[in-house]
Image 1 (cartoon, rainbow, N blue to C red):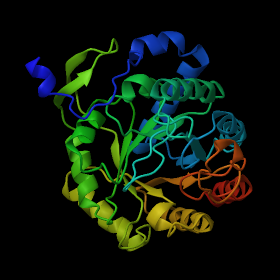
Image 2: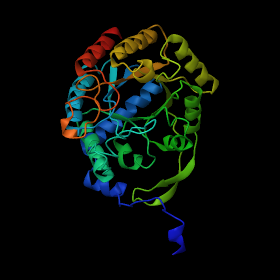
Image 3: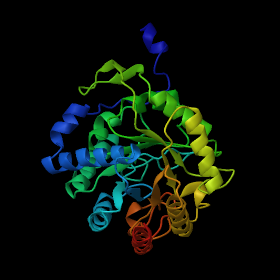
Length: 348
């Protein structure tokens, strides 16, 4: 009885969530999906290690809120991946978790109904099923990993991952990244600080021990080997954009000083676009020109893109949502995205 007065005083309800193994049995990785993930990881790794000279592009919605619309987008992007494969290595941005500065919709996994019902079991299954379907198209997936338990459910279907600006300083996320099976990018902090991200890379490259969960959902102690394929993502910040030559050189010097081979990807959105999606092609073009001028540490870019341009607020009735429009950050339309990727291909 005494325990009831000490714990869970502010917990309203505890619901069972299927274990990672149970969910994997219900939504298994297909042979085609497995082939895509393995190939995608090898491609990303080879680009970071300078064994593949192609330009890496992680392109897709700011966040996934409708899986059917995401599949329409993925089918289009898969065609461009194949068409431009000799110069570009294209992954789809498939983001299910959204860190919030204060409050707001937290992503498909947490609230798949976009209505505050927080059916996480449904959201996790929807996310895993979508990753299988996109990989079956031959299109590798990249995603930000926020909740430290989610990778046990989804990471086997990811070829690349990122640690966001709000969590790049988090010890929990640095430890998690040290054990992930794919290359991981650390974003500079929201204020533009790159050193925090470089510190994250240093940490994630080393072995760690931490508390996690097994595939059966049991608490465990995980010991990692360290992840040698971590890299820096420049996404701008409150201090302004940081994709210009001077900012990139600063990132290069910080990584060299840390004894890390400089590997940089530029996020064309967020602070680098001043949150205006129409600026993303300009950022992309600038990065490509810098790379062509000899800045070999620039390995690729991220682009926030959707079927339709702009953004929308989530209405009281989610069925009133406009088709193909982001519910988080404003995105570039598919037409303008295709034009931008074609231009990059022709420039390289």
